[in-house]
Every structure is written in C-alpha cells, then in structure tokens.
Image 1 (cartoon, chains in turn brown, blue):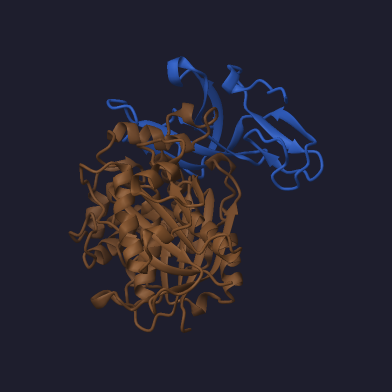
Image 2: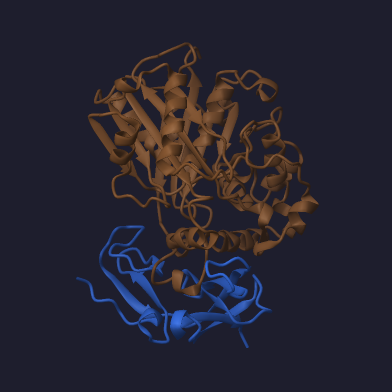
Length: 379
Length: 119
C-alpha cells in the first residue's frame, strides 16, 4: 500500500505571545485537516512532537483531548529537530501496515514567548553529554560553532565562507507570508552581526519562534493535490558531538535509504528542504549528501544554486534561519513547503516543472537523521 | 553493572580512551559495545594528553545571563578520538599541537579538561 501526504498546515512563525504549545498544535492540525479535506473524526492515529516548554509526559494524549479526537493509536516522539520527519516516517508505516487510514502528525510550541532565552538555551544544551560535555559550559550554538571552526580550518576557508547561506534564506523568506524575518540581509550584515559562538554570528543562527505545523498521511488520495511519500530513510549513529565521526554523521546514509526506497537519485529531485538550524548545519548536510563538493556549500549559495531557479532550489520558505524555528514544527515547515512546490501552488516562488522533492532533517548535533522523498501522484 | 573507571568526571586528572579488543577501534564517551563492531570486550586506558587542535570557539551567548566569554575546543588525541574541553590559551587555533591539562574551571570548581598550545 502507498502512503499519501494528503494535507499540510503551517502557522506563521515568530514571537507571538498568547497561545500555549497545545494551542499552536491545534491551530496547525486544523490547517492540515482542512487542507486534506479530512474530518477530525476520521483520524485514527495521532503522532505528536514534544514541546520543551510543556515538557509533558504524554504529548499525544494531551493534544487529543484538547483537540477533541479519540484515535486508536497515539504516541509522542522525541528525536530533536528530526522529530517531525521521523513522525512522518512512522505515519507511513502505520498506513502501509493497514493499522490506520488517516494519521495526524502534529507539533507546535510557544518556544519564543513561553520561556526565557536563558531557559531555552539551558534546556537545549542538554543535547550535550551530561557528564562529559554539559559541565564544560557549552550550548547548542557552541557545539555547532565547533563544527564550523573545524570546517573552516579543514577547507582553508575564511569567516565569510558560510555567510551566503543565511543571505539566501532571507531572500526566500521575503517571498513567503508568515516568515519571522523578511528584511533582506547582506554578507556584510551577517559578518557584522553580534557573535554568538565564534565563528557563528547572530545571523548564522536560526531564531527561536512560536508556531506549529501538521501533516495528514492517508491510505488513499483525498484530492488531486495528494502527494506520494515514496521513500523514507533514517540513520542514528551517535548522540553527542564527542562521538560524531566527521563527514559520516548519518546524513548520507539516511538519504540513500530514502532515495533507494523511492527508486530515484539526486538528478531526479527538483526541489529540496534541508535542515538549516545554523549556516554550518545546512552546509555540512549539503556536502555529506553529495549535493555540493566539500567546503563549497557557501560558494554554491553565492552563485545562486539554492534559488528558485537554481540547480538545487532549497528551503524556498526561508528555512529555519528566516521562516523561523518553533522546535519540532520548525523542521516540518520544510516538508510543507516542498509539498506546496510539488502541488505547483507556490505562485511567484514556484520551482518550474517540479515533480520530486527531498526533505532532510537532523536532530541534536547531526545526531538523528531522517530523509523523505515526496512526489506528485501523477508522476 | 559496569564499574566506571575514574577520570576527570570523578575528580581524577585524567581522560580515558577505550580500545576495542576485537577491531581496534578507539573511542572516548562511555559505551557498552564497540560502536563499530559491537564487541563488549574492550580496554580503558588514560590518554597521553597530547593531540591536534581541530576546532575552537569563543562562546558569547550562554545559558547563564552575565556569564563571561567561554573558550571551548576540540582536540584530536594522539590515540585517535576527538575530545571536547575548555580552552585556557587564547592563542590556541585549529592546526596547533595541543596539550591537555585539568583545571578546576567547571561548575562549583569541578575538574575539567583544558586545552592550550603544547610547549
């Protein structure tokens, strides 16, 4: 049986005080179910991403009660930034096994306004090893900064090597309603923004946002807009930076598993959604996936490779760097954007002739990887 | 229950490297099985303390408001694994030979590995 992505929903991201995490989730769920044309009553399985603000033991049950549904399968998932795509992969399994007809995948969090920045920084720093890394005083940006430092040194690059990536994300975000940041920025703006963890500066880092996202995965088409989830692949090779093997984080392994299942290769893929928590994150992913040569992701960005009409149209909603990052929902927005592109509903930012899309998310410090291949049902 | 060998996390000024008795893989963080070959047969021994600095950062935005700038680094030990530590030598840069010391610079004076240029 083939699993179809029948609905997607993404709220605007930004600092938007008011709703709590579950309220962002219910808003996103309504958007996705409306998009799919599926009645909430028809949802027989529910997968819900964690919220660091809520920290609830049972996020799926918490959501189901508040939303007003009574699914026969419900569970929460936690694999950091990869959670949304990992939930999608599980939703596909539930549909393909016949256990569910309509699976609702949902996440949302008031991460920007529901906790202080210091609390958020401390909570996220727990992806470090409790005994061997956290006592050193690092943060998530610090861990990625170490990767960036090693990257620049390895390839003999200067500090400006990554700056074109956030600049490109901002260009995309300017064409996307709901993006947290839309004002254009330049390479100089990136280099002159305040240092967070050198060599990473503020504009190399995604913001913290409030917002939500949801998908509906179904056993059959609900409209001509339904898309086929033709491949998923995962890799989980380490948790901590101190156990990461440089260049073999698992990104390529997850992608190859997804591409192989879909029976496609990179030349078939027309549009991309690649996790971009930091400029260095998307550079390392692009290079490990083999889309750009080692050390050249920034140069490719500078040359327009990730533009709508470039060689690898990528994150055309602005990515985490500019659309924003509300936790699990942040990594789901990439897939929603790729789905919108594949439906040919992206207006002025439409990628021409796109039929196949690839989305990649990572959690932790390049720790948990999930790749997903989507394609038009008429392909 | 596997007994944890003493190291800097238990207050001893040393840092251990584990070597797999089956495949020879080396690693740093505690792991029951070898991440390469899954063998549970391995030996733990203190590292010599020298290596190659492969990354440094100066952390400006920290979890604790008011905390100062923190230097962190990665050193590829001569034994193979890459380890994280604080940096006490502002001149340390990727590509330098590094020497690991142990200093009471962690939370509440806890012992942590600290990197500087060798010699």
